Length: 555
Image (cartoon, rainbow, N blue to C red; front, side):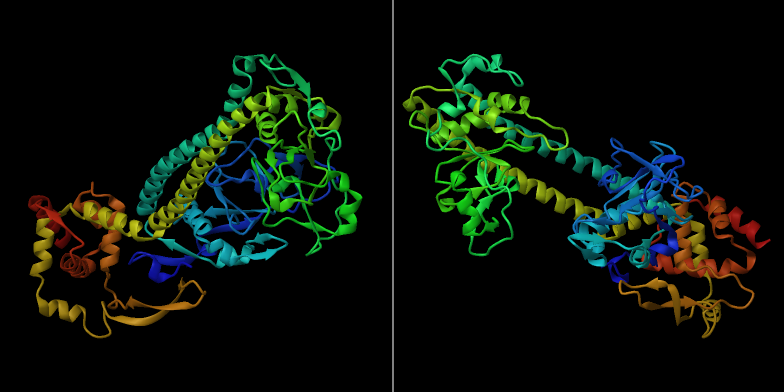
């Protein structure tokens, strides 16, 4: 969790609720009539962007309370634990827009740059700060308004926030490009085996196959029902498996069926009595399974699932004497066969295949020796593709971890501190030499008088409610007690003024930025001496400008 020790020196840590306005949207209710307005829900708030492809409407009675403004940062209030607090910024893409109560809206106060707040919150999500601050119910974590508002928020000067936000944005572009490349490789690997199966089985004939239509083949075409074991027709399995039985019969659901493998580690089990009612769909090693609801994935049954079963979302093929089971699996996963199957799906919300159509699937049938040769070559390709896919998956995981670490470091960690140091050095380079010389020439006795006990410059323990640590405890921090009637300029105020001016200003700009009056001159020089001694201020020669300015100030 973020705390004072984890942010750069000189920054403050306020509560989120103290630096911006935080609300949740309107609860979704039944339509009782009235004007309906478009609104955003969790599905619309993605990581760093808004997905506006599916914006729904409902009746609001908010008098504009939930209407978004340009720069509002939106966070998912309810999500899986690793995604809770997923954040994006609203840029007026669709106006007016409102929010549902599953979305938190953070509207920056005058001292917070919205883009900087977005990077802080994205860092919190990726580093687990939001997950640890949430309460989980039924697998969904909730980041309540009160817990979110109580979280610490690191607050550097505004100009530094803008620079950090810009730098984070540039780095994010690079990371997004890496993710795009990884995604492209993943899609290529997904397509390579079905495309290779087309080439190995159909050759140039694959061009004659299209969605829902069979084409020509260099081999005789049979239908699927005629190439399976006549004693084991193509069937699906258990309709109502009942409660899980620890030592029962394992069965394969649609979500357990992956392309080329079955997730056997966490299979559910039904009672032997239920399995006996569906013995016609029991499994043997080398049976081929085809998903028939939503996804048409293909896998071959391993030895350890002998005697298991499937649910109604999966069709079982048991190869007959004329077809090799591995060849059958490769044909079912080929691009041409998949296009035919998808062309015969029915339904919109839950598209699926009926067994009558599955049994009519055309199957090219070369001699068994050629089938086994084709299957062997494609098996080797599948193995290599799996290794590459694992490497790509590891790369995506590494990229995610890098993104989280970079965001945290750049938003309020080590990289942010270096950005602040670099900006301070650049900003301070315009301090004229004469000001440094005047600061050095200030008599030590005068400095001692100004810094006498109980006067300006003393540091005493004082509790400020806006300084909090990660647990919400108040921190005791040093503050300066000014001399009565005298203006006090602290070193930090001097450096913040230099930060804000960005290194392009004149001495007059610096004095105006500090609001320097005659009784603050000594305090200004004392702060400057401290900054020079600490090495946080550099200077160039501009003696003429400095002297004329000093003359005017002392008049």
